[in-house]
Image (cartoon, rainbow, N blue to C red; front, side, top):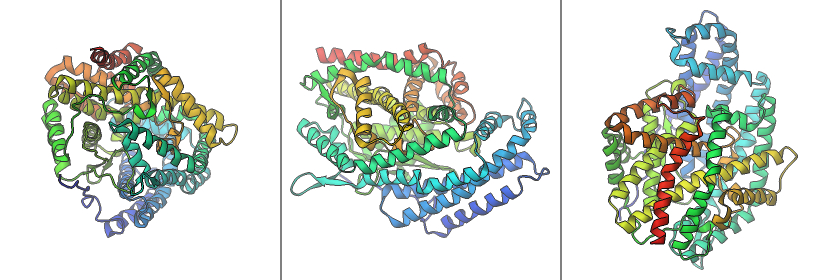
Length: 581
C-alpha cells in the first residue's frame, strides 16, 4: 500500500515565516487603518469602500485559513502557534475597523436603500448590506467591542485552543507496547470486534475523566463570556444570535426541530434492529459505528480517488473534473498522525481561489464518504469563490447542503456496485450517519440549551456537564441505547466557540435540505446540475428562505422536512427487512 500524501500548501504561502505571509499580515493592518481613516469622507463612494472592505476580509481570511490549517496538522508546533497569534493580532485591527465601518453604514441607510433596490448599482448587495446593518444594531460601543475582541484572544479563543490541543494529543497505554491517542481510541469505534470497541470506549472515558477539570473550566469560560456579550449586544439569547448568523428564523427552526422529534422512534427502531444484527440485546454508545455485514467495502486512497470522481462525474462532469484536480493537486491531507486534529474539514483560500481538505482516512467506505463530504464543501467553495467576499459568505445552515448532497451521490454509487449483503452494510452506514446528524445533533442542541440556562446561575462542575449530556442523550436516543457517552461535551470542539453558538442544528438542516434537493433531482433530470449550481451560488447573498425559494421550497412547511426524512425512512425500512430476513 502506497504512503498517503500530505497536502500542498505552497501555492497559498511558502510558510508561516515567509515574506509573502508576513507581507499580507502587514498589508491587512495598514489597509484596515487606511480605510478606517477615510470612512468619514463623504466624497468617498460607498461602492469603493465596500470593495476595499471586501479585499481586506479576503486577505485576513487567507491568513487565518492558512495558519489554522498548518496548526491543525501539528498542534504543538511553535511556528504555527506564533502564526495563529500574529493573525489574531491583525484581526483585532480589522475588527476595530469593522465596527467603525458598520457605524458609518448606519449613517448612510437612505443611500443604501436607494442604491440596493431594483436597478441600483448595489442591488446584488441588498441582503448582505441589510445583514451588516442588523449586525450594527447589535454592536456595543467601539471601546467595548475593542475590549471584547482583545480579551477574546486570551479568553474564549485560548480555551478553544486548549480543548483542541488536549483532545488531539493526550494518550494512554493500550497494552504493554502501545500507546493510543484519544483520536486513535475514538477510531476504534469502527472496529468489528466489540471487545476492542468497549476497551477503547472505556479508556477514552478515563482520559476525559483525567482532564475533566480543564475541559469544564474552558467550557464555563466560553459559555459565560458568550452569555455576557450576547446580552450586552442586545440579543435575547445566544440562540437568537445563532439564528441570525444561520440566516433563518424561529418558525424555520421550529419546523426542523419538530420534524426531528417526531421521527425519533424511526431512529430508535433502527438502533434496535442494529442490535439484533450484532447479536446484542441493545446497542451501547460504542456500538453506534460498529460495522454490519460481511462485505463492507475497503478502499485504497487511489481507489477512493477514482470512485469519488466517477460518482461526481455521473451527476455533473464539471464537478467530477474538479474533484479529480483536488486529488491530483494534493489539496487533501488524509493521513492520521500524532499532533494532527481528528475529524475532517474543508477550508477555503479566497486569494488563490482554492480549497484544502483535512481528513483522517481509514481505508473504509466511511473514509470515502468523509472525503466526498469535504469535497462537496470544496465544490461549494469553488462555485462561490468567483464572487466577492460579501456575496459568497454563506451560513452554516446552507454550508452543509453540498457536502451532504455529495455524500449521497457516493452512497448511491456504492449501492450500485454492491452485493445484496454489501447493500445492507451500506444502508446501515447511511443510517449511522443519519442518526448522528438527526439524533445526536438534537441531543447536542438540547445540551447546549440546557448549559446556557444553567450557566446563567454560575459555573458548572464537570459532573454537572456530564449529567446534562447524558440527559440529552437519553431524551433523543431513548431505548435505542443502553450505555451513553457522558463526556461528549469534552469531545466536540464546537461547544468551545463563542463566535458561533449552537454549532449543531445547522447540520440537521443541511442533511434534510440536501435530501430534499436530491428528491427533486430525480424529477428534474438533466437540468438539475445547472439549477443546483445556481442555488449554491446564491447561498452567500440571500437568506436561507430565499435560497430555498429558488427551488420552490418553503422552509417553514413541516411537510418539506418530512418528505426529506422519508428518504431516510425508506432505507430504515429496507434495513429492517434485511434484519428480519
